[in-house]
Amino acid sequence: MELLTILNHCHRHRGFVYEHARFGADKTRIDVDVRPRQGSAAVCSGCHQPAPGYDHLPERAFEFIPLWGVLVFLQYRMRRVACRQCGVWSRRCRGAMGSTS
Ligand SMILES: [Zn+2]
Image (cartoon, rainbow, N blue to C red; front, side, top):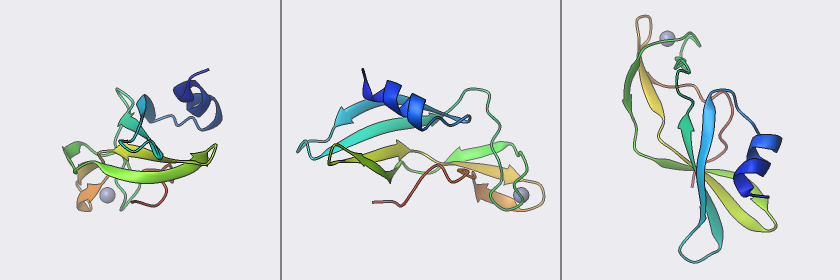
C-alpha cells in the first residue's frame, strides 16, 4: 500500500489532491506535494466566501502527523484570492494544514 493511498483514506480533503510523496535528502522526512483539486473554488480567508484566484505564494512546508517516527511535511503553494470585499488574501486552507517548518 502506498503512502498516498493511506493519506487519501485517513486524511482526505475535498479541495486538495496529494500528488507525490518522497523521502527528503537525508531520509529523515517524507515530503508530500499537495495541490488544489481541479475545479475547486478558492475561498477568501477574510470573509470565507468563494473568490477568484489572484496568484500563488512560494511553496511552504506544513508539518503533518509523523508516520512510523518519520516526519511528514505537506508541500503546498497557497493560492491568493482577489476578494471584492476584502482585497487580496491567502486562500483559506480549512484547517487542513498544520504548522510550518
Ligand atoms: Zn473576502
